[in-house]
Structure formats: structure tokens, C-alpha cells
Amino acid sequence: MSQAIKPLVPKTDVVLMGAGIMSATLGIILKELNPDITIQIIERLDVAGTESSDAWNNAGTGHSAFCELNYTPQKADGSIDISKALKIAEQFEVSREFWSYLVEKKYVGNPADFISAVPHLSFVWGNNNVGFLRKRYDLLRTSPLFSDMSYSEDKTQISTWAPLVMHGRDESQPVAATKMDAGTDVNFGALTRSMIRCLEKMKGVTVHYNVEALDLDPDGKGGWDVFTRNLLNEEKDKCNTKFVFIGAGGATLHLLKRAEIKERKGYGGFPVSGLWLKCLNEKIIQQHDAKVYGKATVGAPPMSVPHIDTRMIDGKKELLFGPFAGFSTKFLKNGSLMDLPKSIKFDNLLPMVFAGIKNVPLTKYLISQLKLTHEDRVAALREYVPNAQSKDWQLLEAGQRVQVIKKDKKEGGILEFGTEVVVSEDGTVAALLGASPGASTAVAAMLGILPKCFVKQSKSEVWQQKLKEMTPSFGVALSKDEHLLKETRQRTAKILGLGKN
Ligand SMILES: Cc1cc2nc3c(=O)[nH]c(=O)nc-3n(C[C@H](O)[C@H](O)[C@H](O)COP(=O)(O)OP(=O)(O)OC[C@H]3O[C@@H](n4cnc5c(N)ncnc54)[C@H](O)[C@@H]3O)c2cc1C
Image (cartoon, rainbow, N blue to C red; front, side):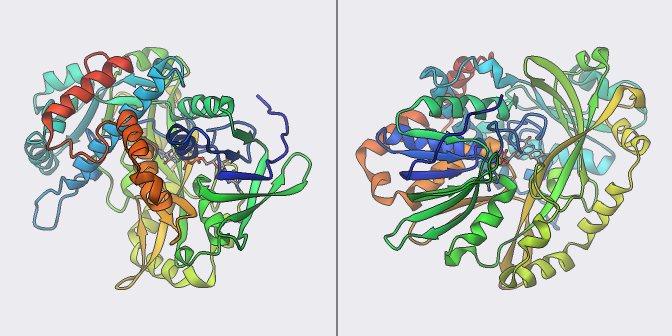
């Protein structure tokens, strides 16, 4: 759907660069906290939520660490660290609360259009991996967040959880699986578009499609002049604002580098593209009803953990396997091949070189991934779906993830796989870098910006009360508050139509 060109508003309180899940979330939060606030959203494409946030461009996993083994890393001494899993699980509950608030307020329509109950399974084979999963399960289930998790090494039991994964499997192979029924599949693209539509109807908000943010300069009065180009007629324009959020996905790094703030220094980015195998056979799609995550291959980045996923996209059940890694120098799927070379600056050159040297296994992994043929990819799929036939699967391009590289005193430069919010000292600019756990934790990430950028208002009684209304558990360790966890899960499951989950 093409959008009409709207002239920029000369001055607003807030400019959100990019109309992905992050900007959409921050926009609604700010508008709820202060209904008088004026916001301008600048989006280079003609539709919101069609870059990384789009359903086909990400895995749609409501990341809650129920199945993702990379959130519970095993240390050199064999012990397993579950702290990240607890944090992510808590953050996802906050997202569920916020989305429930949106549904109750009728800001978004039918929740089934963006969220579905899909069990989350971890599945491993081989004695070492089975031992790891059992240990992980024993640790996790002590937390109320994971107390509903089931564990099995019994092949018949696992066959009932994931028949496609067990059918045709070597009988002698030791296997184990965990299952969480509270897992979800989320269509972040549909959710983003609903939220942006809601914002568009709010007083004091304008959304400008086909407009690219080019630069931002301090206006000398504590605010920012934002420079843009209309991509339909090439006209340049400018507007003024008190606060800028750079939510441009992979392109955030470019814009952050243009903001004259000292915090921009030392950041670089490394793009990793994703590819799926999409199932074309309706009979097979119907045989699977889970998100089944396995263990990453040695050298693979944590977000490249293979998984075979039931997806609900635009009312249709789908089945995707991946992601396989690809390499492109673009920072956005709809970006330019010059994105990576252009991002290399004097201040991030050394961190990027050091990060490159330290990540040789990743480079090797990416090269090996690039060499894969369709048959090689189907062979990888057969580790999860032993009876997979290559004719039933088609290659599909996913989104781009720009991993954060940053200066590090000890290492010179490090490559990170998480999400990082960079905020200027005076709180007038915030930027979101990285993409993992990503969209699932957008609400916690955006709420985290408030005390840094809206310092006084955040402490006010009015904001505090509204924040509690939108996200009752924000700031509470749900892993330690079993009662609140139970209450919030039951309530949000009901509102979001997730059954007993
Ligand atoms: C393969 C893959 C799998 C993933 N799986 C999951 C998952 O299972 N669960 C999960 O929670 N997350 C997942 N993620 C991460 C998740 O998709 C991202 O964290 C999230 O979508 C990022 O949202 P965003 O709003 O920051 O960026 P985006 O959705 O990319 O939005 C940025 C917007 O900014 C616009 N833009 C860019 N430059 C400019 C400019 N100069 N001016 C104006 N507009 C601009 C873009 O067009 C775009 O619309 C995955 C990502 C990938 C790539």
C-alpha cells in the first residue's frame, strides 16, 4: 500500500527515525505517558515494519529463553549460567503485558493477527548434549519462570511433542527434549503496522513514508535539526526536535555516527544475513506444531542456532527451518552494498580489525555457509527432519542483522550479539544497535530509555502510575515473585488469546 507524501512538521517534541517495532513501541509508550507530546516518524520505505520486523525477515520467536540454548551458556568448568535466560524470560513477560494493554485499549485489533501459542522445544542428540540439556532443565525449573517446563529422553514421548523431528531418526541415537507450552510465535511485522496505524490516528503524531533521515545536527538550543530526503521526488527537508530516537534497524549505526555526540565513538557493525528453508508441502506443515531449537554448530554466531519452526503468518500456518547465515555488505535488506565500507571510520577502524582477528571461527563459519548448495542445506535440515525431501523446501531470504562491534579496553574491539541502547549524555538522542533478543524485548528496551532521556518526567507520579498500568511487572524480578508471575501470565494469556499459556 503506497502512502501519500506529507510535508514534515517543522517542529515536534520527538522524531523517531524508522518505523520498525522499536520506534512503534517507543512512540506509543511516550504518547500514553504524555498525550500532549508531538511525534514525527520518518520511514524510508512506503510501509512500516517491513525490514527486520517483518514476519518473513525474522524467526517470530517470542524469545523467552524457553528453547534457545544460547541463552544458557556452558562455562569452561561445565557449569551452566542461567542468568541471561531469567532476564530474557522476565523481559518477554513485560512485552506480553504491554501488548495486552494495547489490545485492551483497542489500539491494536485481534491479537491472533500477531501472536499465537506455539510450544517451545529444545531438542538435542548425543550423550554430551543430552547431559547438557538435563542439567539446564534441572537449573531452570527451580525458577517459577520455567517451572512448567517438561523434560524427556523418551523417544515415544518426544515423538508426540514433535513427530516430524523423530520420524525416521536413527533409533540408536540418544536424544532429549524440553517443552514449554507457554511459548509463542509473534508476527512482529503485523504488530508494528498495527501500532503505527494506531499512532497515525493520534493527535500530534505524523508518519512520513518514503522519507529518509540523512543527518542530525545540534540546533544550539539543546535540541536537534533533522535532515531528510524525500525518496519519491528527491526533495530535501529539515525539521527540529527536542529528542531523537534512531530506530533505523541496521541503518542505525550510520545515523548514530552522524549525531555529534561523544557516545557514538568506537562503534562499528558487522552484517550477517539470514536465509530460511520454507516448506512448500502442506501435509508436512500440518504435521508440526512447535518451535524446536537445537544447538549451534561450532563457530556459528549464537543467533544462527538452527530451528524448525511453526509460524503463523497472515492467518496461515507455515514451516521454516534455519537460519542459514549469508553475507552481504548491506545493513538493511533494502540497503546498499556500500553500507559496510561506508561505516568504517577512523574511530572504529581498530575495534573492527581487533574484532575481526578475534572472530576467525565466525569468519570460517560464514565462508562455509556461503558455499552451501540447496542439497547441503537440506542435509542440515535432515538433522532435524530426517525424512525431509529437497523438493518440498524453498530458499527464502530473511532480514539483515548488524552485530555491534565496540571498543574494548582489554581486547581492542569486541563483536557483540546482543542489543545495545546508546544514549547521549544529555539524553536528547538514543539509538538502538544490534538485534538479539530483538523484537521480543522491544518493550523492556524502550522502557529502559525513559529514565535516561526523560529523567524528570520518569520520576513523576503520573508517569510511574501509567507505567505500572501498561506493564505491571516492569522492574520486578518475576523470577522471585511467583504470585505476580502467575497472575500476569494468566491475565495476558487470556487477553492475547493464548489459551492456558
Ligand atoms: C534472521 C533474523 C531472525 C530474527 N529472529 C527473531 C526472533 O525470532 N525473535 C525476535 O524477537 N527477534 C528476532 N530478530 C530480531 C528482530 O527482527 C529485530 O530485533 C527487530 O525487528 C528490530 O526492529 P527495529 O525496529 O530496530 O528495526 P527494523 O524493523 O529493521 O526497522 C527499522 C526501520 O527503519 C527504516 N530506516 C532505515 N534507515 C532509515 C533512514 N535513514 N530513514 C528513515 N527510515 C529508515 C527501515 O526501513 C525500517 O523500516 C531476528 C532478526 C533476523 C534478521
